[in-house]
Image 1 (cartoon, rainbow, N blue to C red):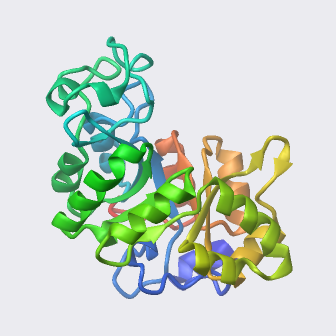
Image 2: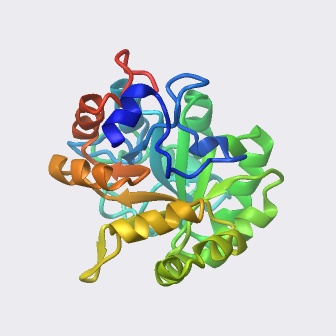
Length: 284
């Protein structure tokens, strides 16, 4: 069914309407049907250098329109693109990201490549790119909001966080509607509420338009046909992370999920091309 719909250019009948959140409306042409979201996890960095400008450039070269990234604040209040709380894993330096200035972080090679980029650099370098942004720390909330408001980037970002408290604070401070995915608590509540038909009211109350979940969590299967159908009936998209094997991609797309987050960007592109859901010229 999915393949027939994508080839005809029509949206799947059960797929949620993105409504006023154009971020979620992934179309190859202005009036074409909505395609599934393909999100390059921290860019495309098979040899290291995650969350760097080089990794993002590689993803863009593959044709990705969406990136999944992480942000933290520097000691001088600049929004930096970096996953871990500490620098040790991917740089030669140590200690917390929050203890260094933006200038100091920019000079630290990540995975042997370029330094830690700012979110503003990424937004300005690729003005058509859409960013799924995991806000990792409370000190990043206000500078993140100020940046998005200043650049008017509300339609280009989706606000994500494991902390629903932090996520809701961001949404309250933004001056225009901005897409958001559920944090850990709301994800768990929606998983319980979906079979009862209560996912819609809970999703609206929680200000979420998407659930971003692993296929299984601590041995419990999260993504099932019933769960996806219930989320769609409630107007919620389902995005699954982090999916790197081709057989898993095919199985989840056949199940009807709305997006996949993957480290294996080249494999995901091949999967979607085979499903006629990736434009032939590579642009999205």
